[in-house]
Length: 420
Image (cartoon, rainbow, N blue to C red; front, top):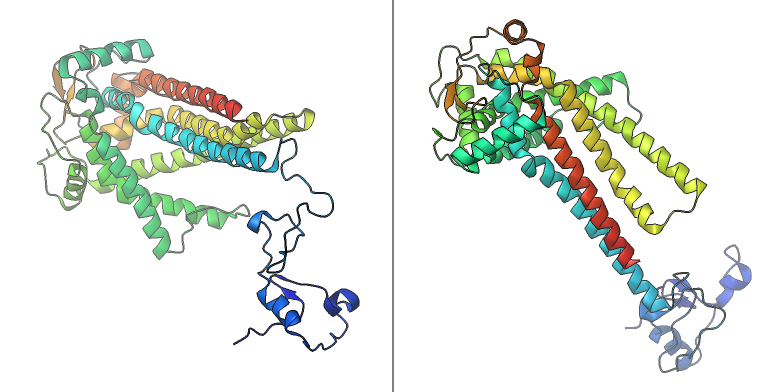
């Protein structure tokens, strides 16, 4: 059976015929195929697909059995201006694009590795200092923090600074999963569009609040794992955080003292800290990103930018904005985080390391009645600097993060310059 298609049809377009002469408005004259050669011509001609069989745009595939022309008719435009040849330019462009994608993935991976793995010892010491109301040394500078880190590593081994890292990933997973499920089964928006309104913002923040409430018991269990001393710590599994979180909800699991605060009294400080952290980081991120994009645009207009700089401008502004947003929100909300951690840890019979000596252990025996009582007690007994215990660990954490970003940028620039 012969295929039925109009005369002059050649793959993806019509060839010759009445369309070229009369346009779309005229009637196509009928034509009878008197010879087998005419019929065989349009039946055996393969379709013309731009880019197939190394054809240039506008060329037609030769009929079956006809010799291919040695040179194309008319001038041929180079697809890659400035390149030596079409094939070499194409290969060079593809390799440069692949390298750019690979480097962009590597930059994001390095940033995530620094935030969640490399900075974990700083998070551990920071939390231990925050909940240690006995401490006389507040560790406000990075020099004393490095000294106490060395003491912990010497007396307890490297595990003392990396404890609870698995539980932090679990909390992040629970948070993302809860946010996705709530947004699926409720009309609460997960993202805010550019044409936002107060109602949409309120619904989005309500979604965040519900997410923090769901993740709260697991966050509390993760906090205990990160501050519990390695000297008396049992070798718990990676899913112990989930077990303790569920046990905290249903009132089972590890026995707690009577000073343990119920979960409903922890909802307000937990949601307040989470929502404020999200709002501050989002505003600063958008502001920094807007400034960097305007600066990049002005530099592109003022003078020609190299391809390497253009590719760097495509990846690093967002990373820098995220870095600045996280740093500012952590610094601004550090006192509230100290109060939050003390309320979560109270009554859990947790034994922490002595952050004054670098050895020995201390029990947590606080008796705060709530958030307001905790704030007043810290202010009276430890002073205003008591809210900033362990702040030197934050300085080390973000200095390390900035150094990794800068080293990654240098490596990325070198790779792109060698590929161009």
